[in-house]
Length: 363
Ligand code: NAD
Image (cartoon, rainbow, N blue to C red; front, side, top):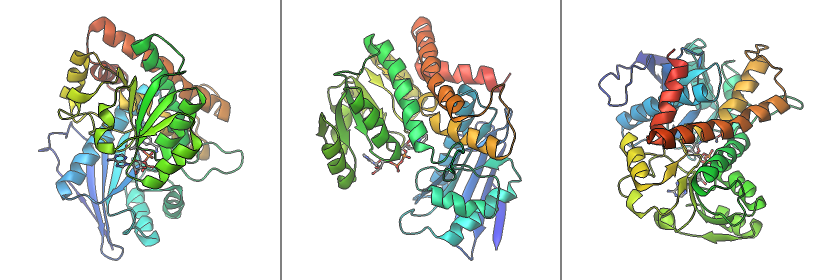
C-alpha cells in the first residue's frame, strides 16, 4: 500500500522555502520516492524523476531540494508558465527498477493532485513514462506519436545546450563559429552524445570522457576529430570549452584550479558544487553559462507536449514543431543577454541568471 508523509525539510541548507516535500513508500513494490515542489507562482511544478541509489536518505532530500529549485529558475528563464518540482526514486535504476515500482510512483504523482508533473531524468526512460501514464495524467516526455509534439526530451536539451554554448563562445572567444574550437565533453549519455554530433558537424575538435567504454568506442568511430581521456582528468585538458554532461557538482574547489577552459557550458544540472564556485570561476576569468539556462531545451519540449496533450495553450502562438524549436533557439539570446549583464555588472553569470529568474517568478 502506498503511504505518504510530508517531510519538514526546513532545517536543510537547501530548503529555500520549498512549498511541499512529500515522501512516498510502498511496501508491495519497494517504492521509496520523494517529490519536491519548490515554487508554483508561474504554474504547476514540473520536473523529471531521477532514479538513484542514494547512500543516505538525507542525500536524496538534498537532491530533491536542489533539483526542484533549479526547475523553478529554469522554467522562469525559459519563458514557461510552470513552477519548479522534482522527484527522486531511491533505487538502482539498472537493478532495482520494475514496472510495478514505476506504476506505484505514478500513484504518488497522482496523489500530488496536479501540483507536480513528472518526466524523464537520469535513470528513468520514456518506457517508464508510459507505465506512469497508466495511472496518472500528470506526466510528460512520453514517446512521440506521429505529428505530436515532445517525446524524449534529451535531443531537445542537446540542441538547447548547443545554442547556449554558442552564445558563451561568442562571449569568451568573440566568434560564432565552432570550427576548430576545442570542446571537452564529460558524459556521453543521451544529451552529451547528441551535443557531440552538433559540435562535430560544426567542425569542433572533441575531447570526450565517460565511464562507459562502449559509448567512447562509438564516439571514436563516429566523430572526425576526437580524443578520449580519463574522467578524472578531463577538466584539466587545455581546451576552449568544458561541457559537463554527466552528474552535478563537477565544478568544485578540487577541480577549479586545474580548469583551463575559457567557457563552461554543459547539460548537467547543478554543475557548481555551490554558489561560491561561480564567484571562483568569475575571479579566474572563466565564463560560466548557467546550467539551468542552457539545458532548458528538454523542459521546453516536454512543456509543449504537456500543454498540447491537455489542449491548454498558454502561449500567444500556436504550439507546433516549428514554434517549439523556435522557443528552444531563444536559449541563445537569453544566454547572451545574461552574459553581457554579467560582464557589465562584473558579477558571476550564475548570480545574474538567478536575479533575472527571480525578477520573473517572484514579481
Ligand atoms: P545519461 O544518464 O543518459 O548520461 C549521463 C552519462 O554520463 C552516461 O553516459 C554516464 O556513463 C556518464 N557518466 C556518469 N558518471 C560519469 C563520470 N564520473 N565521468 C564521466 N562520465 C560519467 O543522462 P542525460 O540524460 O544525458 O543527462 C546528462 C545530464 O544532463 C544530467 O545531469 C541531467 O540531469 C542533465 N539534464 C538532462 C536533460 C535531458 O533532457 N536528458 C535535461 C536537463 C538536464
